[in-house]
Length: 441
View 1 (cartoon, rainbow, N blue to C red):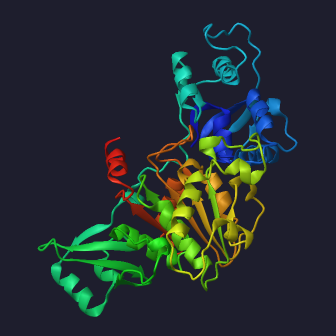
View 2 (view 1 turned 30 degrees about the vertical axis):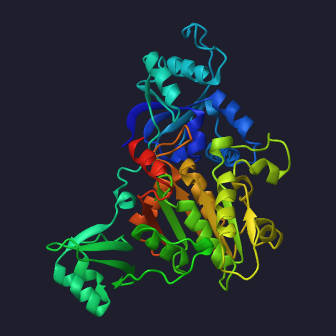
View 3 (view 1 turned 90 degrees about the horizontal axis):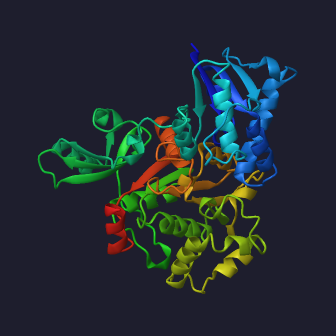
């Protein structure tokens, strides 16, 4: 049943979720005309925000069809969508509010709509706009359609206590049926640490494989740059990065836990050896430097260099300390041989990324829609890895429970899909300073 309310959307909702009109459960939905003005500015942009703007406009045009806007566009659930412009000059905002700013025009349209519709509510991902709405006694709320109610699935360290004799049995047999542990280990868990209920020092590591949990052995791989796993979680991660059955890996961890370093290391080593992966494709969320890099001087590589500094730093560290190969390998040589490609997310749409190990860094700054767009680019014989710290989000319209990394990893976990796994890294290994800062601050 539709709620007896009227939602007024702002631009941030349309960009965050271009299909939002199909997921709102209110009698009336109002899109201020200035929203289309803002979408018009974004639609020509070649970044992911531009794609979202175009997608929303296409969806709206399809819903509208030949119907007249003044009558409202009926949706399948019985709701109606209206487009409203500001015409009531009697409505004034406080003098400190810029009258010509788009957000403030939206606020005036909400106040104007209150005269025509009951229970008007501003729906926005913009925290500041919601605060300004409250100042004007306008009801406002966040768009929460994709918000995850619980992140326990991806934030659990997967440590479980069981009967000590079961641990002894796993060491003897090497496996145990999933059915025997179904009341202990949730079905979605792929890697786990089992500890004795009586003797807490007795433990065994296990990995899910079809209908059994196998005793987990430390991956027998030599990482480049003389790098070694520093803890159990990193061992689980290395195993997932090398497992050919796992096509999607979500790595969640605070600063200094080795997310990017290990993903780059394992990806590059596989590209340089006999595996299906012929190139390592690396990209980062563009949020910290602005979503559109077009305004920066230089060619694409020159524009991206400052933004990709952490990637270059890690690659240089790996190659400078590596003794795995007879000849010295440089970043320039890898790029020339087309074994390494550093790409902007802006230019991934329309591509089919085959025979590639793909790393998307800082994925916590992407929306779920953007993660979906990237995943649909993955071709045959490819693996994709998303890394991010969900406690360190730079995107002003995202939070810990509605960013793309949280949503995608949680959804794949809930579906218990064997081609995807989430690895949680909690221990900072970069330095004592990094570890203390991550914990205290």
